[in-house]
Amino acid sequence: MVILNIDTATSIGSVSLAINGKAVQTLTNEKQQDHAATIVTFVQTLMQEHNITPDKLDAIAVSAGPGSYTGLRVGVATAKGLCYAWNKPLIAISTLQMMASGLLSEVQDQDAWYCPMIDARRQEVFTAIYDNSLNEIMPPQALILTPEIFDTQLAERKIYFFGDGSSKWELMLSSRKNAIFVKYVISAAQLADLSAKYWEKKQFVDLAYFSPFYLKPFYTPQKS
Image 1 (cartoon, rainbow, N blue to C red):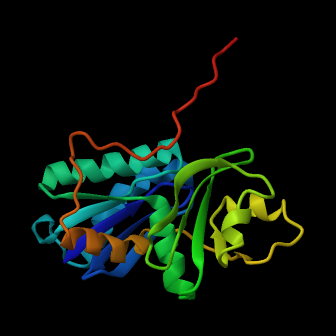
Image 2 (tube, one colour):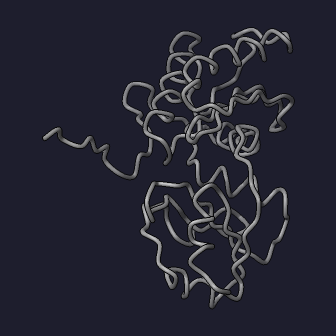
Image 3 (cartoon, rainbow, N blue to C red):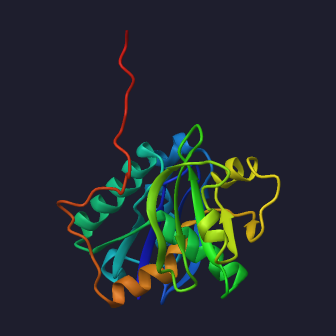
């Protein structure tokens, strides 16, 4: 099983080549404005270095949001274009679920819940809560942060908060039992296990109609 995994949902963009659900190499770009220029180059480099031709690929997976509007468009458009050109199925995975899977594999705390947070500007984040089987405890949503916003969940379980939006909520708290803040770096490699499971279940999206999971409509201020 050979799958290309693409993530451009945040300021860090990356492409990872996975074989049988394991990432074998990942290339990363940390300048968001360069995602469009680097992602296709990363795909070409990975395939050349590992002698992977399009006919050997089983699928292409993309981190499908929420996240940066521009970043998501770049990643999804690239993935769809490659799928069209190479006649491959497209796997679309929630960026938040991908993040939860990545941290769960690192900390391996089976008793905790996982709350990824993506900065959505001001005091808002894109977030969700997952259990140790990646089932949704709280579905993905755009949430305005307040100090007491997770009181109910924290009363029930230890929760890891992470991602580039988590520091905003950490600053609101003096202390909070069961709230654990950890360092985290997003990567397309964290799609490897999930995309393999999606492929095995044939959970593909329609190339013609699929669009990113924005969660919020795009807003452009009107000029006065």
